[in-house]
Image 1 (spheres, rainbow, N blue to C red):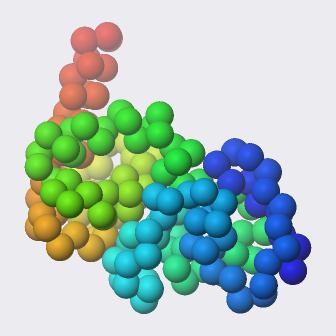
Image 2 (cartoon, one colour):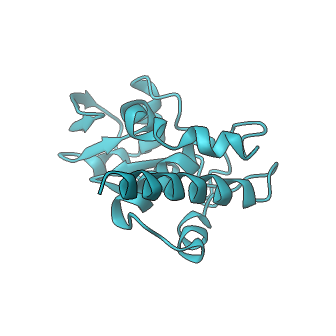
Length: 157
């Protein structure tokens, strides 16, 4: 089956097996940030943006992405760099394995809702599994980023 996908802004064409999962496709094309975790759509480690919407690539057929845009953390480094330091400052990246999924969902959240409440952040990130931190560090980091960004905006008004 021939597919054409825009992967991180670059056109990719491939002949794939009909049952190939999107996680396998993006990893075969150098996107190591997309990780295998539970393989049951419960942990968020495999999150990618499909036409800007977060999807779990372990349960999405690559064929469903034909003609569409797929973004992984490799293609979003500039956008991610704005806030990942805030998350690290809160001690929320103990082992770091879950970070790409959290970052991908945070990018999607902030694109959809640039000034979310803590409850909205929790609701958006609830599908990400972190066995190390208890999630409060990620929440504090995102909140610190938003507070910093809001304070920066106030200084420029």
